[in-house]
Image 1 (cartoon, rainbow, N blue to C red):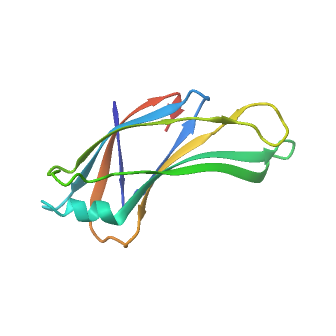
Image 2: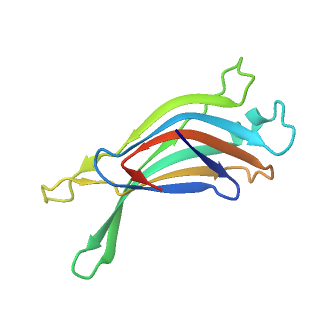
Length: 141
């Protein structure tokens, strides 16, 4: 198991997917802060949005020029239980790579990158961090 962090200074992290079998498993997410934030972490969670994005960049092969990109973006929900007292979320969220075809070309392609992004809706001034416990398979980064 590996740990990664997202916060105001590092709001996103990108991984390179090496095959169509690549996946990222998010076991849990823990909210931390530099200050005493006893029950304020629920306020923080309500003001931010966590997203995952699979991305494939289409190049014009002979010249290696950018043509287009194909994206699949979806939210990762951190839902607070009414009786939850600790700032930890057991997600067990599996993000698997997917295959697709481009136009009429029958060759299967797979997404090249996976990005996790912490989107700050209300311009938080607080120094909160989300610490992720993850497992990776066929992923660099």
